Length: 313
Image (cartoon, rainbow, N blue to C red; front, side):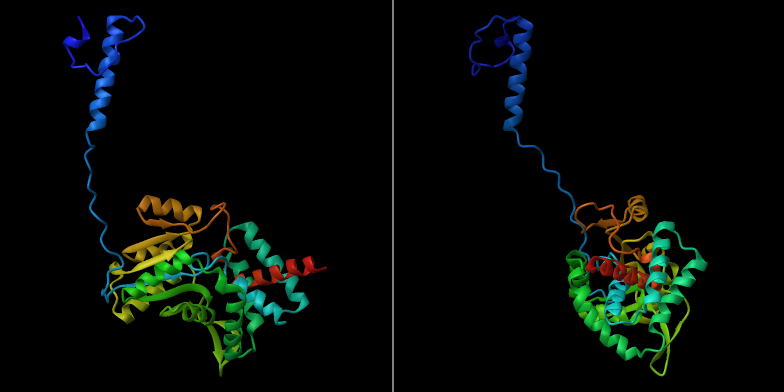
């Protein structure tokens, strides 16, 4: 049967090579179908826009940001330790001990309570006897020297969006509250929740008030602040890079995984949490020192100092 009997194919030029009737029919039918489909505009699927977030004017909402590797590349105490060593806060005998403790933590990859207590006590011994005002002043200088250029622009923009919406934004970190407060102030944030070192008469005693603000303690701090501020946690957002902060992230209605470690990335995907990654290069690589080091991360500053000393020799 001639193909023209089935299709109006007057636009197709006459074939120059012999072919079977079935192959001609198949080819011409495919060409006609392609021609028609190209002339038909595909249906446009409209997806409903995401609700506005953060919600402008929602006074029951606030945002809580982890610091290390979330707002800032690396650990704040690592950079703070570098600044203290530059100012001769460390003795030679401290360097080897702090460096070994930090190396042990990085290799072990776990938080042995006894070891963590040793690291914490060593770090606290550095500031024991110094005035709080002195450390605050030095902290301002160290921020300019080592920290300012390490703030992630992407995370900074997220924090600014909450501020522009009229919401309060807090840092939540295991770093000393004094260091965290300096960083929060420099970034224009509301304030900071951090580890509180005991002081008497404005002088550090070398002890902590409670424990480092780490893991579940962060969640408790956020819960307490929300109650004091009259916040609705279901309206609040929290941002972190570490699986250690899952308790804090699970507390709010809008959890975000920022530059997440592998455990947090997996958990966030399972829970349908939003992810943001502002790192470049090998995203799986650790940047700086794990936030899990808590107050003991100060030892990382000593380790860095050892490396710097070796390069200068």
